[in-house]
Length: 114
Image (cartoon, rainbow, N blue to C red):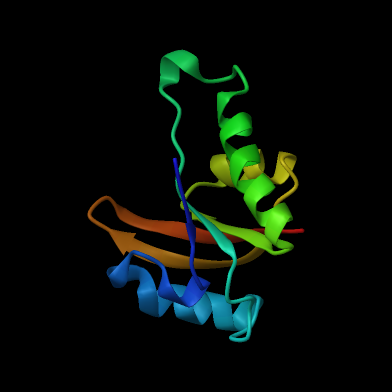
């Protein structure tokens, strides 16, 4: 898992930047907080899922955001993942579509404010 402190318009996926910029501008606004904590990568090996490991990892980033009085921002490309983050208190703020080598999929932007 990697947490980055970046402005959400400077996400580390250049190929997604135009889509993310449109999504950010239309949902949380171009003036979003400059120092949000961005959840870049989170994965738990299937053998260890459903044991609370992912939740604990997210809580690390939440603690950083809480300490700074800012927010956690993330995106996901599956509704299953979005529902997991919603159970952790994240709100879906917007949705777009992206094209990948595997076809078209949703791109969901979620935030949690502190």
